[in-house]
Length: 169
Length: 338
Image 1 (spheres, helix red, strand yellow):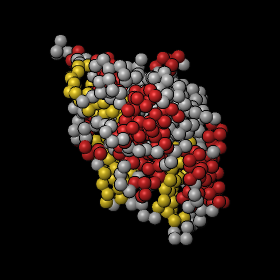
Image 2 (cartoon, rainbow over the protein chains, first blue to last red):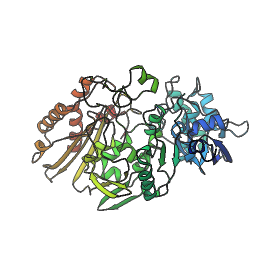
Image 3 (cartoon, rainbow over the protein chains, first blue to last red):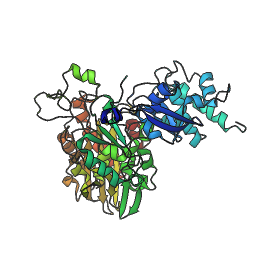
Image 4 (cartoon, rainbow over the protein chains, first blue to last red):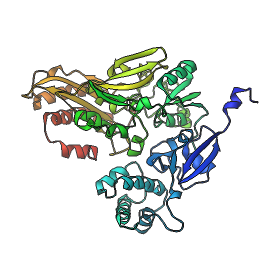
């Protein structure tokens, strides 16, 4: 019934955004977070659902190039914005240097925190191609990992940074 | 899985439009800035506004202007605030506080205005609905009893903002705008010492700007105690600022404690005036601050120890303002360069 305010309110909303470099349109319930829309309505389950409260960093994605927590980002506030997720990194079969480094250097064990860490690291390396070890630790200090003890994560980001600085990459 | 409750979403493009929506919707509407405090609370059913008024599209809330001091838009994210030119040199205490809020990812989202209006926190409150239901709730939300001190007639939830103690020490004022008009208040006067009614902001008002006086002659600092070097809310915050004469004699001083009360706790600094920041003078005001602090057993770590270290932290802050090299202590406490 269109005359009933309550039913009216519970209609889905339409959203257009640039998702991993491609224009996307999606319809969803307006209370959903970006994390929920990515996983449930767009089928992109690479972004992980962790604490839901902003206390772990597993759901980190880039919105307009900035790493944010998709569990605390209303999807309705992403209209017309650019969203990058872990699915957007590989080029065909070729892994992004960050993904390759994490695989080769033990930056990922159980893997649950990995998409969030890699998106955070991608934003860091986009702004600072040659960050110090302390700077890497500081930039990733919002991403919890229960497996690696963090050293392998920092090393993987250092390796990827060196790889990305190599001409031709 | 915790879902947000249903709400109407509005996205005004100007402060005036947002104020009109608030006036029309009444107490059923809440403002949404970065969302890093409100959305977790909504997921845990602490707040269930019928309407969310998103402030993201209001450019005026991001404005920074220099003039007779510094005016900061309340909608600046903490990351954007830290990028404001000259902030670290001129208002160091604020920069140190902002840099230690939560995590880099949360600072990319959370705003300065949001940190000032941060909901008070408590072990018995910051839990999901089922957890709170299991203890028959508490007086802050859905219940009658304060489980921190069952004889207490008021809620003892903790003021956990980092930027407020730093800004009060810097003499900040804030601008509040409603459909009926605008007013400016000293930031200290924005807060009540009550875990439930902790803000004097009226439901139809929008905190739009933070106004800082010129820093001429003042030096400021902020020290924070927390378990980890990231994520955690303060277990103690010390915002301090002093204005000294050429020979180091204190002409004016402000000292504000965070996380040891339901509001930022302003400590009288009369004992410092006309003196130099000697070890004795610092120890004296440290003892005063420690005796005034009333940490409660509703956050991390032992409350007696948290009270005990107040004097130490006041000492770190004032010795840094005196000119001592506190770098090694800072790194040990903050676990990062700030």
